[in-house]
Length: 446
Image 1 (cartoon, rainbow, N blue to C red):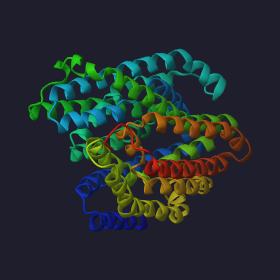
Image 2: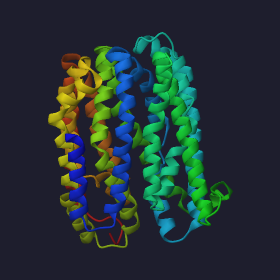
Image 3: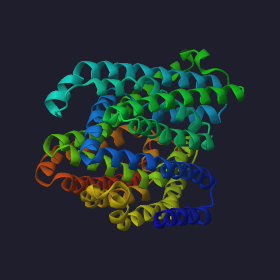
Image 4: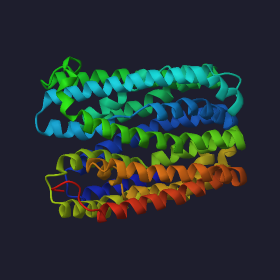
């Protein structure tokens, strides 16, 4: 009840104070995400209770390696394609829009298939020698769903660029609800960890199929046409620019995957399944706390992308500062409000055996609160074309964290890792925010 009241209050503040069209769109996205969380949390709690900390940690380790491989091989093109799609949509260049849509789907599927091959070939060694599992069958089964799951990325880019935020809210509902629902069904049927892995994989595949079908329907209904019929030649003039952006985004996604998945593997190796499970569950709680940040970022990205180059730089900087004060700080307050109630929520919902994870989760929430205040940060660097600058800084940040993580985990376990992650995230966020508002304009009118 306390958490629900805090979230409702924050949305009320946003509605009253932010006199901008993004309020309604953000409200839809945030409501969808928190609504999905309220339901999917039931499945997460059930999984954690049914498996217990040790088996939950084993589940986390099984899916971490396919996700890590996906971060190395997958380009996650939606961040890049959304930028160009936003321009094509706003200027009525529908053929170019469809061509980029087709390119995004193709790249997603191809890289996912390559990731599946890597997991199939190398998974046995990782399972036996790195994390102490008897085989790699479940890893391969989870990775087998990724080609279909990859369709979600471009589908999200299409509805974001065309500013169909209610559809984007529906996509978020499906994304959060389906995998845990299918996982818990198989768990209740008595299939244990294998059931949870297979259920999640089936849910991911369903998400990809449903969202690509919905996207195709929307484009056809609006008279844009079928995306697969568009020749890729329509985006050929931008191939070098898009390839450069995708290359930087590939590096960014790789660093992000390392930062997310490597700590799980290190905790499993150095401290056991239980602490790996604590980290995975704490990451999920922090992700829930960051929904307002994610919703605001989704809405502002296409806005910044369409405005960049046609708006005075001073006006954009003033807008960013206003967004920080009027939307970022309330969003940050929501995350901070969750910290004191975690000691009640975690053991009450997941069981007393999960109580040791509370201090680490509280520390990680602090980093999420600071990031929420600057929800526009990632969108600004991508919309302004400064992807390389962002990626280099993020790579340095991720490298330092991973290098120091081994020592912190070995000595202090999950709590030590949480301290490291929080300090690093706060420093990175504040540093990049200061650089954004002080940076020189790039290429003409900014």
